[in-house]
View 1: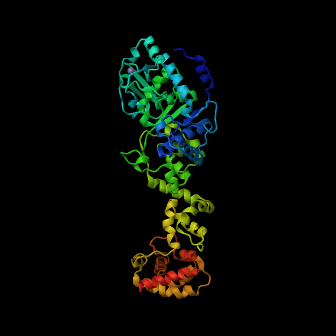
View 2 (view 1 turned 90 degrees about the horizontal axis):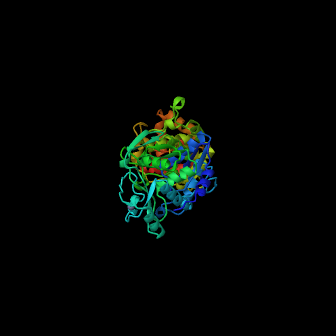
Length: 497
Ligand SMILES: [Zn+2]
């Protein structure tokens, strides 16, 4: 077979050199799982830390798994997260195309080149397709006589269009050593590596082959990927060696776990990035949290927990990447999110909270800005809000057991007395504000010689029908307005009688 060597020379000439180049290479699945977001973030951080180039490549060679609109999810997520790419399908670049299905011809040419260089062979065996893209952890040894076929027989079959795959030719003996930035040096016996399929009979490359070709042709200097691919790394090394190419720096990251035993998975109900956003986590909080899932700042930053994206880009280093699996701790993320919410300006918080507040509060009489101000300091995630403020629209049915509260020295009797004493005072109150309500009610408590809570607790229950509210009694009364507040207090008296 005659190869067009000029083609390969032209391809080599296009490869940019001299700068750090990283890529995020997702498959368009329709969502971004947390591990994927972390890979995107780390690759972006490596590039930005070094003043390098961040590339987006779409790996859509597995045509069976394509989901419509899925590529848009990738663009949208990266944009929302501020992970801007310098090269990619939408912005172009010197080594386009950046979508694998558009690079199909390239893989075939490089597979033929690799055969000529002795690193692969045409395999005409039947029933090999089930091995394609099989679980990369499974070692499926393929042994056949195809590598020993006479050259003219191979030429004859190829010319006749006999279906074939291209397999990597792994040396039968010896070892292959591979270096990873976080796992260090790993040596494997070649006898444990299988002659993996590189090009399928339909001409499409396997995941492993397409990655090596694209990473080389795109001048990628650092490859970040999941540690589940560690076992295939030596085969990558052999491919680079056969081609005579420089091996990029590999950075394998331990998986993001749901618990000690299980990897996070969308299929098992673990949240994707989109799910978290929908639940009311802020993108900055998610990114901050995800950055620390498997990476820790060092030196004087080692105690720091909160990082903006530019701060991360400055602090990020490969040495801080951990080898041990990271457990995704939703409680920690909730806490971190609450801290980010507290730091928002009232206007920023209102913009984000409004849709959630409106799910529960439709009444035009309620000032949502005031509600937002009340809930902001104790809000962990935005989707908690409807349930916390739904009483504003309509007093829920509630049990008078709520009036019994040891800490406030309240029971049904004291509560009834408190509401009955407060009612005429509030009926007469003209300035219906938090301050004046508070002054009037604490004066009542003082007059009666009881603690403030004896008056304020039952009032809070009467106004909300809940044990937990986003504000105190007078704040709730101010929000609800005079006539609604008085109606609820009268309702409380009725229930307690
Ligand atoms: Zn064969």
